[in-house]
Length: 188
Length: 305
Image 1: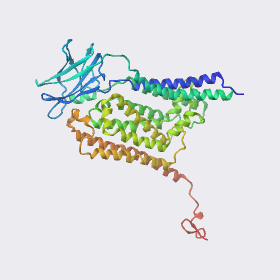
Image 2: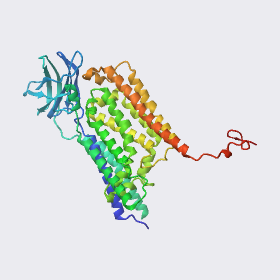
Image 3: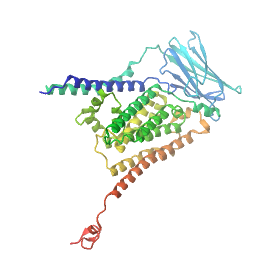
Image 4: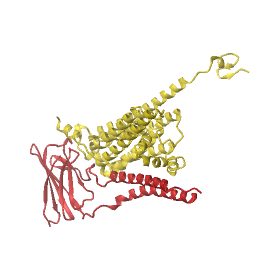
């Protein structure tokens, strides 16, 4: 009669759990939602704005109350040359006119992509907003473009993102625990 | 300095999750390599791992460094604006980083890097009779890996999938992870790194396996290079950096995939072929009397009756 010693079982169980936890942590950090490494949802795609064109992103996607990032790539309409020296102003106002409008200067320092002008605006109430981006370059040329943005209430962490992590953990842990328990029974 | 150049060179994306994984992987490996080296020196054990060879940690750290550059440098930030940068990023992830990491035989050293109480249990997950080993053996056979490589590589270059990856960071990460995983599995067979759960490939099969990857990258590269219209619409909405038009950008990206992508596998295949020939030459040759006398041979290879 051979029996798996508690020490051995514990070591194997600990190793399995450690592996599962590591896999979970790595997956969590890799699959974190709305990471900053892309600019967010493209709201305007090469939209004409006077002598310029604008490609504008908003994040998070979908937009929820709290800090909303508006990032714009601005380029000369004629040759698509990027504009790097300009004053860019972002205005967010409720479409129904109820509530205050907010303005913020978009700057290049916020984003990891230094070609982007980005503004962070705190939107506290859900609803439909009009976002306008006005640009004026060093030569005094100006243009403006806008889009509508639906902002929903922030419901906290989206637990759907945890599903792939749970699946991976189950794939790793359940067969190992099942196998260990079966082996333990057969050895008794 | 040119403002555009300055803006691009300063566009680094320091991603905590990437740094965490790279530092963790590097630390565990270095610790394991150091422990194995100390044991080899102190006990005068002849190690099959050639632990004294410094090239292993150099290759591994080089692989991690290039992985970090691919995922956090301006190459990644500008990948969403120029197809060329995105292609360079993919070449690094698929063709440069995996062989560098696997040449260092990372698994055994990483297990040695674990705390003592966890080494044996971690190793036991891949023991001969373990379920993990059996499952891994089944799903990572050379044929399946080759097919997965084709599906992943060509699948992500479909215009809809590629554009979706550029628009959604989750899909973008998934694209990179799948590229990286299938490439690691592909190069695992080529390098023969641990865990050695498959029958080792002979040099000839290894050579053929590497050559079989050339058409995969070459055909995709040719299709992109000679396309007469922009394949990925996303890039049409981007400013054109350094006066590079959408079509020129696409052609350069296609050439990178076609030439550089194919070249990596060809170079590796040539190295394998050279080693194979060296081994053949090192074999003792037959004595002349065994094959060159009129009594033994009527013609080369045919014995006289």
